Amino acid sequence: MLHYIGKRLLYGLLVIFGVITLVFFLFNILPGDPARMMLGQRADAESINIINRDLGRDKPIAIQYLGYLNDLSPISIHNNSDSTSFWYLAPDKYEHYATLFHIGTTTTVIKTPYLRRSYQSKRSVSEIIATAFPQTAVLALTAMTFALIVGLILGIISAIYKDSWIDRITLFISTLGMSLPSFFAAILIAWFFAYLLADLTHLNMFGNLYSVDDYGCGEYLNLKNLILPALTLGIRPLSVLVQLTKNSMLEALSQDYIRTARAKGMSKRRLLFKHALRNAMNPIVTSASGWLAGLLAGAVFVEYVFDWKGMGVVIVDGLEKYDFPVVMGTILFICILLVVINILTDIIYALLDPRVRLK
Image (cartoon, rainbow, N blue to C red; front, side, top):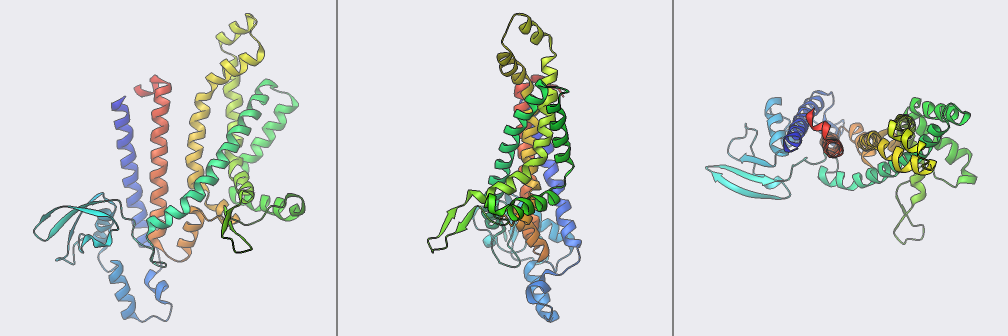
């Protein structure tokens, strides 16, 4: 088991390193000058050069890359005597660090990964992510809970009434849900429920988890704003889980032990829920965990349409303003989150089914 976990951790680290490299070079060869965005279109060349020097963008791309890795690494080295090196400058730019040792003019420190600061707001990227991620997490967890509960119910009903009109309607709805792009579904649902039926639903087309009180009493939790984004985000996993539950249940019901239990007179309810559903849950749990990771990463369009102040809005705003540290840090955070969730899923699946460890 330890060998299996070690392999998964190694693969995860390689994926993270690959994403770091890809993201860095992608955003450093894109057209656009962050310094000009910060100073305005009338900025003179000298001011732009000063800003680029302050941001470290005046160095060769290879030196910038090594400096970025140095910032992300939990252990980093610094030297304030060589301005051409990637370890130039003292570690005072980090919010929290501890010095390990000194060798000449070089200092080695241990720290949390440093995602740098926003070009526009000067806020720490870690702080921006810490503010936005809970909003995305609440939205994704709510959407996944909705998809899992409704998907299990519809999938079981569809398996029980196979080839009936109920099964056909369920198949049509799930196929439609899988074929709808998230961006189009978000616009359609917002228009239908929050515009056409606004007098009946009393739902808002835009809104956040917390709303400002009209009487100056601060913010309050407004769960009503969660309904439409969660419904939109949960449509695709719901459609997949319906068909997966149906197929898993039909496969479990066709097993010999089910026929034996039915021949012995076991009640239909006990047969379905205690035996068939229990043995059909492994692929469902695996799919649900994968979809949860996907929802955390793929809520960008849904959040943008509903103006939900999560990671999606942060990414779009960062792209519009050429705020590369924010976009790069957000993408890396999502990548690490996906890798961690996938590793945990693999470990749980290996515990449930020891045969997986042999792969």
